[in-house]
Image (cartoon, rainbow, N blue to C red):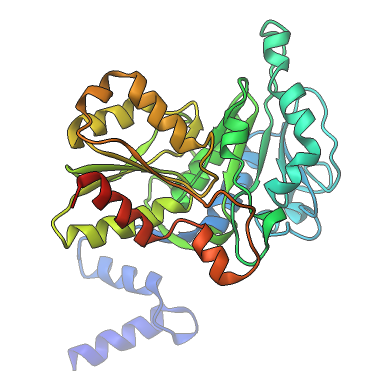
Length: 357
């Protein structure tokens, strides 16, 4: 009878007679039950980016978004969904126009198309502060999907992390999770330097847990700080963007075989948090880098060079190993595409190679 009475009370409290979470909380309070802290929420990368844009547009009237189809169409990947209706034509713009004193966010439908604007990104945005002796800052964010998607072939599948990270004057960030995406976008918008934010199309619809702290309007991820996603003692895996997930999968498989991998999510490509990598290598004595880009002059090559030139080199018990995309333009056929992108099995093979097992 007590259970029936409780259910009836819930129905009375919930809208429309349904048992809702608010009604449950109210009933708990009435009974004197102590409530625990809110659990982490599942948020997709797409929604995290949208939330970051919305909060920064609301926080600072100088922030505006421009790009291809970002306004009435809500963005090619719906990152800007609802923003045009909320902020109007002056803040969400479908034309590539910016004015001094504002803080534009420029969306590329894909970074492959950024080649059409690379003169402005490199010769103008990246160099203006230096060439003006620091008197002119360029607070602009260039963001959009980067790297391989699925079935879009050679002209839509390049990773531009090494391209843009090569250039002084730019900051380059590359998020993996929803927390990364929101925190890095907010930090990029607030930064007085030009920032290139390399997202991944295949992650937009993937939900990640976001802590209560990450859901705050004040939450930012500092540019230039890596994150240890998994602690380990035998080998360091360094990656960014979508391959971070592959590294975590590989680490879970290897753990069953008694191999403990430490997984580092770079988050920022330039400036690179080499201190975090060095500290990990000193602990594990082995290094494997993983990226979706091409091998020559890549992000992994830079990580390996920096480790070789620094104090952590003396702690390596084996040569560092790079896992990269294949050194070819991306083919269209799915079976070939899969073999051109680093897979979990490739990471496992590389770890066993460096550990000689």
